[in-house]
Structure formats: C-alpha cells, structure tokens
Length: 329
Length: 253
Image (cartoon, rainbow over all chains, first blue to last red; front, side, top):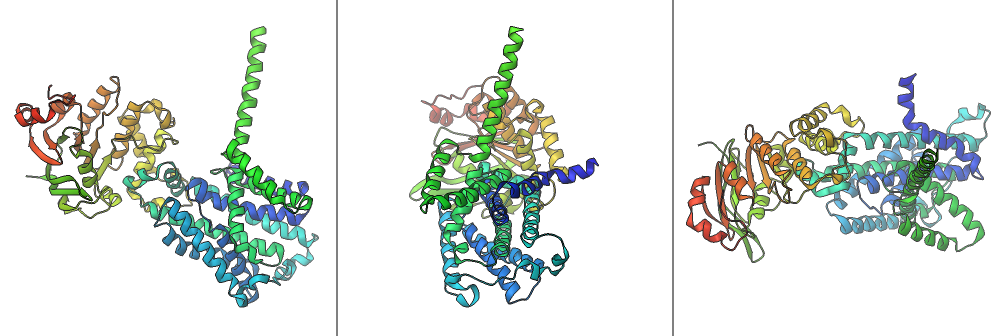
C-alpha cells in the first residue's frame, strides 16, 4: 500500500485539481482551457523558474504543437495518440534547433534571439495558408468521438470524455516535470539558476543542460498546443503569435517562478480572470495589466510565494496565541 | 623531474594592457606551491589562465604531460585540474550537501543529463558528498543553506567542492581571504591535509601561512616572475623585500 502511495503521491495534487476544477468553473471547455494553459505554464516554468531562462518561443511551440497535431490528423490520417506524439516529438526537435542557436548567447541576447525566432515562425505560419490556414487558422479538426469511436458506447458526454483526456495529459505532464526537477539533470538546472558561472568549473557543459531544458519545455508546450487544438476543434493563428508567449509567461510568473503547483494556479487565475473580465468589459486586458504590475511589485514570487507567506503568518499567529495562553495560564 | 604543471612563458593581455608576461611556473607532483606578490601583480589573472577561465595570448600550459592551453574550463576539470575561487562562489540557495553533491556529480556530467531518475540514484556523488562532509567536519552545516553560513565556513565548502572531483591538482585562489581568526587554523590544517594526496597551487596573502606551509614559492611582480624558491630563499631575497615595501604584508614568519 505504501508503495502505491509513494508512486501516486506526486500526482495526487494534479489529480485532485483536475477533479475539483470542473465543479468550480462554469463550463467543461473553460476547465479544459485551464488545464491546457497549466501544461504550457509548467513547461515554461522548467525554463524560467528552474533554468532561469526567459524565452519568448513558448507560444511558437504552442502554435506548432497545434499545427503538427492538426496536420497529422488531417493530412497524415493518424490516430489521436500518434498525432499527439507527432506534436510532442516535432516540437522537441524544433526546440532543439532553436535552442542550439539561441543558447549560444546569454541574458538579454538570448531573450532577443527567442523573440526573433518567435516572429519568424509566426510569419512562416501566416504565409503558408495551404498548411496552416493562415489568417483563418487551421479549421475542421475532427471531434473526439470520430477520433476515438469506442467512446460512443460509454455513458459520458463528449465534452466530459474530452476533459478526461486533457486531464490525463495534464497529470502526465505534471508527473514528468516533477521527475525532471528531482533528477540529476534537474539539480544541475537549479544550480544554473542559482549561480551559472559556478556550474562550468564543476565539469558541466552548461549549454547541454540549457538546450535539453529547452527541448523538454518545447515538447511539453507542443503537447499543450495539441490538446488545445483538440479542445477548440481548430488552431487559430493567434496560438503561434507573441501574445500567446506572453500569456504563458504571465501564467508562469503569476503562479511563481520555480513552483510547479504555482504554475497550475497561475494558469487557472489567468484563464478564469480573462474569461470573467472579457464578459464585463471589452478592454479587460487593462485590468489584467494593472493586476500583473501590482503582483510583480508586491509579490514578486507570485501566488505560490503569497501562499507560503500567508501560511507562515497564520502559523506564527497560532504560536503567539499558544504562547499567550501558556503565559497567562 | 616529475612536474604535474608546467606553464611556459604564459602571457595574457587585455587590449593594450599586459596583465601577464612570460610567466613560467613548474609545479612538482604532490607539493604545495604558493604564488605571492603585491596587489595587482597579476596573480589572479595567471590563475584564470591556468584554469582555462580566460585565454592566454602567448605561451603554453602543460598539465600532466598534455598541452591544455586551448582546452575549455569544464574539460580541464575532467583531466584532473580543479579550481577554487577567490570570491566565494557557491550555490547560496542550496544546502552544503547539495553543493558538494553537485560538485561530485559534475565528474560524470554526461550521466547528469539523465532527466528521469531520482538524483539520489547517483550513489557515487552522494557518497562523495558524505565523505567530504566527514573529512572537512561539515556535519553540523550539512543540511543548511550555504548562504546562511559564515564566510569562513563558505571558504571551506569552496575548497571541499574543488576536492569533489578527486583532482590531481588543486588551484586555490586566496583560500583564507576574509577569514576570521577562528576559521584560520581550520583552513591551515585542511591545506596541510590536502597535500597528502593532492598537488596544491595557491595564491595567498597571509605570509605566515605561506612561509610555514609551502614547499616552493613563486613571486609575481608587475605581471612577471620576480623570483622562485623555497620559503627560506624567498625570505632572504632582497628584491622580494623591496617589492613588498609599502605594502601591508611584510615578509615575516
């Protein structure tokens, strides 16, 4: 039993989150969207929070993941699982190519290179309507029951089945990232974030570690883009633009760099707030902007940092109360 | 004679500024060799050139019989040359044990690209961390973040990290810099202990330590070698006295 618990405990949090979420938000599509962005934000956090790498290519892999997934389904006539693998592996390979170039430069220059690649891939997608649908997006992705015919016999609605599939991808991504962070590779990545210049003299080739982080992050972001295509039934051009990169970065920073569960809550906050605010006011992004400014100034370690501080304060107060009781006693 | 390190007329220039010129340094295996000189003599620059952190402009560096002049810093480590920094350079947010484990894991860095196993699976690295904690008496600090420790303790961890790769040669840049009187004897004992199974080349300002501990001493002045000899020869050398005049550190001991 304890062995089962050891195996299961790392994924208990994402499992619980995926079960509770649909009861909290208004629609299964919104819940699915939260999980899609959670995967993308976690993948982004591997680079940002653990490797200390700020990349604007996350939207590129999100968009490419959707396109590759769609092309595999529509042109390649693959099954849904094969198409997911195509998206993950394809994005991993492209991330390897981009990473091999961008990681040659450090700091601001790295950021600028990722920005340049993001623009490059956006215009490639825009100017190849035969493949990507261009401005109109890639439309007509098959719905889930067509992809997995055995679902027709099951007594669940299509939207529920779709949500379960997305939840499985989300839980798998969380479990994988947890292992990556706890691995020898993860420990070096954290060391690079802590003090990059010390890592080389210890015998590590820093570039290899950053590139591998870039590949893993790109592959998982591709997965997020693919399940987004599954969720929407299409891949809009906006998925590959710089705005998507921004949203993914905002979700990761909102949740707190260096915290996986933080990324999940950051994505939830971003997606749910966007949904809520966009109903109220067409210029809702201004509100989001102000919120983000306040958060970065007052809680630079994001929601997860706020939560930790809150917990430690509550603990201290209970201790104080106990102390008083003891002294008065 | 068996020299583990043989630097031949090494020169380093930054633009028009000549930091080192024709520096020769030969170090015997399993000896302690000190590099001294007044501030600005080019000791740290020469150290950076030896460890591969900066490129030499001329000359060559032979290490353990191989020419390593153009070998990058992480590969020099794999060939048995470890470097400890003048400015304490650790992972402040990580524990002492994790700092040491990372240093040991770096030895077989290709295996450290493994992103799916648990990090404790690399038992050799964990055992090396444990051995260093034992040998350098770091037990009390093992699970504390190094950023919280005293400067002296951090210096000792710095040396411990450079030992993790079981290097043939240790390059220590001012191991006692900024150390309090409490920690000095610990570092002194550590250096003496190190020379049992390592070759040590170190830059040091504490003349008492240099004179009592070193087998040989090289004096750098204005980027060049002024003289080289045993502690007694250096102590008697008129030129060495002269370059140190006006300096806080006088050749005593």
